[in-house]
Length: 360
Image 1 (tube, rainbow, N blue to C red):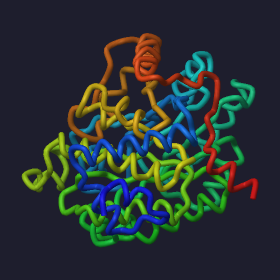
Image 2: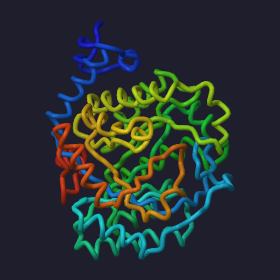
Image 3: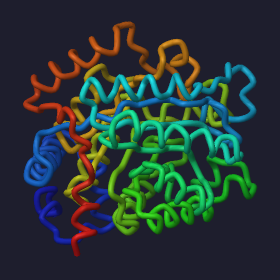
Image 4: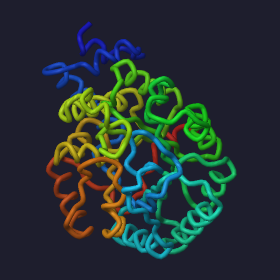
């Protein structure tokens, strides 16, 4: 079957998805054009902003790929104060972001739980309940998830990183703190609590195959997610996974594969929110814009206080702008206008997929 014929299949199989992930040249263009049309029909050309606040790089996890893993003693650890976090919330609200994303290393202490809870309630208060809030704070108990939901968080991003248990095991220590089953169960708890639930994977990992990535796409569809944040794996020298660097695809190949994953997820789940991640921009300056053209509809500009941004160092060559946040926003608006898109200022941009499910 040709790529065109496969794309018109009602239910894409793992084998068909694997073939599409290998598309090059004209076949790749056909895939991207098809995904762009699906996106236009279902979510249009509006891009929603999530002001990214990297709240803390302190983490109790020890994942083999991550620069802020517990055992990386070269990392300068920090945690924003409540006032610093809320100042970023004010900036987002006043500048029309519509939503923020509060992200941190994984912690489960009472002090951490209470601090996030306080920030959520204050963020709701100072914005008159107008700001949308996404959390990305790892695995927590159902009680904590419910508490944060009731305090104002409406979305939660918990990346699975790989939906294949065998590959997941190669990315994490073999202990209860890094359990694949616990990760999946946490996603189910989030759904139960009422969040718009997001997950995502790293693309171009050592040991990873096209079949693994096809499984990831089918996993996200089966889980019935409302949003996704996924992007290319970029290595970090102070991690155990770095020793497999020579096995990696080139950065360009990882970038292209990431675009195909975005396109295919848009085709599989036409009305979810898909973020164009910063890791794309690390490889190509206009990488996020390329993802938006073929499927993504969310951007997450970094509004963390600038003195902390170098310390949230997940991977090598993470881009850090030297401009003011206001100038970054103006530049982003111009870049999106150049590709026929516009920012949904002062709009939360909630998942249409989530809304449709709740109307059934």
